[in-house]
Image 1 (cartoon, rainbow, N blue to C red):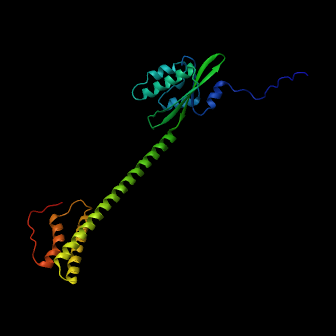
Image 2: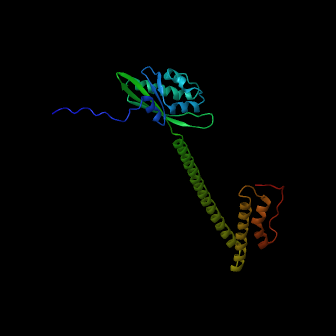
Image 3: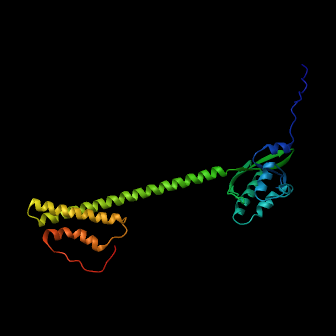
Length: 247
């Protein structure tokens, strides 16, 4: 059989720069020394957003040296990125890192992905930056909502425990009033009038406290609300004296 001749494609193969520019994320191609040999349009836009007037001036500069010289807080992320790129150039298949990169007008976060590329016996690192700001902001909002829900649940538990405590105290007070009234009365009618008066006094005391949201209350008013029923039953038994005092 005769070998078939090779069929040439009619579709032209785009140059490497066109392939890079077709990628939406910011991409730079580094040689084995860390020198930038090519960048795409996404990289230029990324640089301009960070205040760089001439993004193409980075081509031919050493990306690793630039990362090592980044100061302050962002320097730790830059140095971690440089270490990851060196590892890929040394033989690792890939490297990934998420880091903040805030521009002068907004807060942004990016994911750095580095892949190893071998071509014609040479080693390269493909450095791509993906904008993950929307995901980070959504996660921060979710965490804030979870924290708020946790605070609400804890407050509800606190209110339930406080309500339980106050109900128990109120029942104990009612039980004490019941015993005191029973010991000081000799008929059912007298017991009813005295006990009803004392329960009403207790209700007025709670009203006095809740009207001020359990913050402050007049000591004299509280005592008069509590003790007036005793005076009504047995005459003038209580005399209150002293300066005004808020509890």
